[in-house]
Length: 121
Image (cartoon, rainbow, N blue to C red):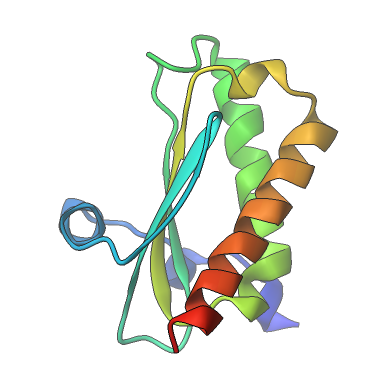
């Protein structure tokens, strides 16, 4: 079951990796509460980076809950995502959703990203 983990190899760790995605975005999934940016990588698995700004989500407990839900949904759906570098950006209002609503929103966003990948191949 190693595919459903979220170790260091599944994370965007450097500013250079984030700049690469921001500078060369191939796929976008937008919603009023979030934005997913993605680009292909040369690895055999997807990687995830999180941007949950204090400007958009004021309380640290809310930022941590959002990040926890994003990581959890990414772990469960990374099998349908190809070799991508993905950045999750939280927008204002995401903290007002319940954890269940956040999970549902993220799962549908991962599915939308997966459909975009298959439609471009």
